[in-house]
Amino acid sequence: MIQVPGWWVWASGLYFVVSIIWSAALVGGMFMLYKKVMPVLSEARLQVKRVSGQAQSIAAKASSTAELVHVKTQHFLGDAKISGNAMTTQARTVGAALSAVLVGAQVVKFVRKVF
Image (cartoon, rainbow, N blue to C red):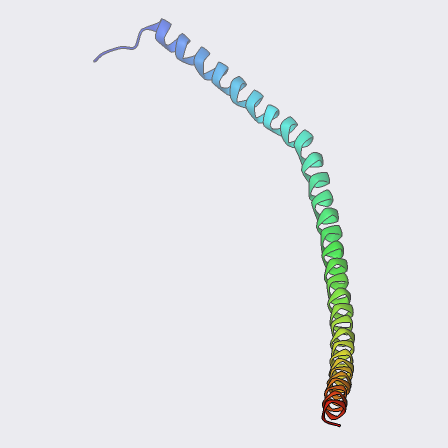
């Protein structure tokens, strides 16, 4: 049977102890990192929620403003259409009156030439 040399047993034991100490140090370091990072993450989460709420508020205000502008524009366009229709009617009336005056003037001119 093959025997393990003594120095190998001592080296393995030393490696085992160093490995346990290293693992404990890593666990301790992870715990310290967790303690430092978690407050920052919690604050970031609160700020994201706050900014999200503000963004929703701004979006609601923008939507309300857009709706108000739409209503005002529709009202303005309605008024402009009514004014345009009234002006068209008046222009037709004035055009008809001018045409009547011109036709009357031509008739008068023709009658003067004949008589």
